[in-house]
Length: 508
Image (tube, rainbow, N blue to C red):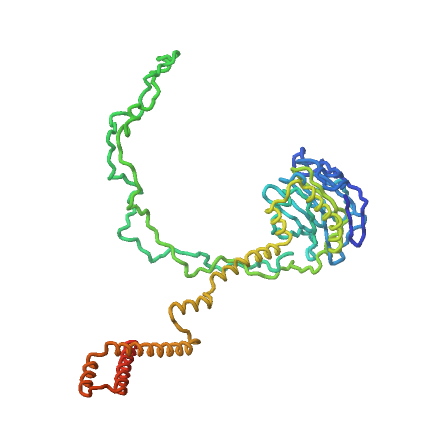
């Protein structure tokens, strides 16, 4: 174990522990005495050989131990660091592990160290039941009133449960009144209306509102069940019962057999007089009252106006106003034993505190990790990483999400150009960029079609010909006796042109 006061670069490695012999006021004598046992020993869960620590050894007892500092601490610098490590070897259900920096006083007697002993700073973990706390309290002298006041830090936000249950060594490092108050002289105006809603004075009871209608009525639609035994009582005298032997008729009166359930009623729907069941009255409305409406004069709940707090002050360097410290102590109640404390440090440099932690706590943490027979679960590792580096969880989540996001974008993007080309080929549609090419292609196809059609028509004319043409030709032949080549060619061309015009008109 080592207590180091690096403050003003003074190292104190030799110290004397003083166990308190005080009694606590206002509680039962059986637990009033600070008789909890302390020991400087190697913890049974230590992962480092001969690594001594201060161990709280008793259950359900008050413990108090302290030591004088070699040199008092005067808060005349801008930085203050308090640091130590704690290990709950068996976990903890209810108990504290915080330290107190005791205020310097000529009357300070460490043998009488108790909960009433003035302290300057209180710092460290505390737990009872489901409530996990991390204290930081300093007693500050108000420069205006001269009264020492306790200033509590806000509740620590990160999850603290693992610090009390994981049975590992944890390092704890400690690296004002409101500006305005309610005006005590401010009075609520007499016409201030705080009623949010008021009775509607203009409302009238409806004519069909029956205030005398009962809340319940008999069910007129109910019918007596078949087989109901009207003449049979539900209870009958026990025929098997006999009077006690010591029954004196003259002294005790006429003996009456005890009542039992009528066995005939067990097989019937019921016995005795049948009555209709009671049901809620559908016409019941109760006593009429006017409805509530929003209050047009509602001004809200009145509160006094705010004025500057005459006791408010802004402390630029709060540590300068703290009481001088000349001792450090542990004053605790615990339902669990085996709490270890080690490597206490008070320093005026965060860099020095980090270097000290590297030489002590970091080595111990790594040794405990290697010595742990149970591998750390994935959930524990994630929780520890989140507590130490919450930004790393965000980065990992982003890296894991990015590929999924890119896949979604790829799946949801518009069809590719190759797909468009295939569709255009399938549907024979054109695009603006290719209009000229398609027009040229269409003209070429038309010319080819016309040429092929022309050839086909000419061939048909040659094979069968038009009836009128054939007749005319025959007449011509008869008249002339012989057909000239020019006349035959002109006839064929005219027939071909007429057929082409017909095909063009059909296409159009």
